[in-house]
Image 1 (tube, rainbow, N blue to C red):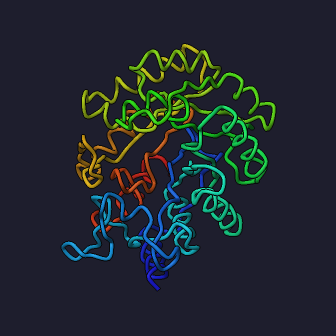
Image 2 (image 1 turned 180 degrees about the horizontal axis):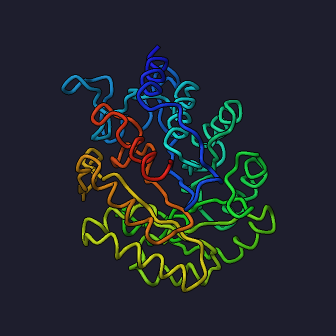
Length: 349
């Protein structure tokens, strides 16, 4: 009943919208999507909403105690819920999003199962939103990665709704998948991975297997050694997952975008520029936390305006629904559908 109310409310307030997709002038519009949430009604237990000791069964100021500074308009939902997936796809279509970059942590994982369901529901609903993967986990060895790429090529890349750019299927890689040892050091995780991954042969294999275009997360254009390694490995495209820390420590978005564009042009790479509505990881119990205020949408709007000036191949939204770090644009109790409307107004129209 809640989903039916939400659908009618937002359609009446947003309009039905139309998909621009390949016909829109300018960069493709992508958004990171997280299919890792669960609740007792669907999955039999809380998943992710209860991270860092939170208890969604408890109320704080009348709202569920979840691992996020914001609260979904849909409540603490389950990513496997068909009605939730359908609503997310409708919202993305309204906003003018071309594709979801879906967090993926390995075959058989919850994210893998929900990605398959997302494809199935997207196809049944008419296929307005393309889908691709954000390869985040399960990289314990180069051989494991090769197996994963083989699996992804066989299971997902051939589907009609798999996202393509310039005729080639595209998949994004999180920085941890490229530099696991460095990433573990940076996140104080006691070096769970002690090896360096050279993607040179893996990139060749992915191209031979299914012509897959891999987009590397370079973390920041100011980290020159990582940028050089990405070029040496043979990556053809780059992005930064989240520039929040860089903006927090040195608030100069135009410089960040200019450095990304200059780097990409210097090596003839495709590139995406990332926009965020804000950032707040204060509910995660991390050793170091920080916040970039949303300023009622002004921060997000400013980043979109700046990113567009550099004519990237992709403008990438971090994120559609990463609630833990407060980067989501999905409708929330705190701000309604403001960010869907901003995306539609700036990029989707």
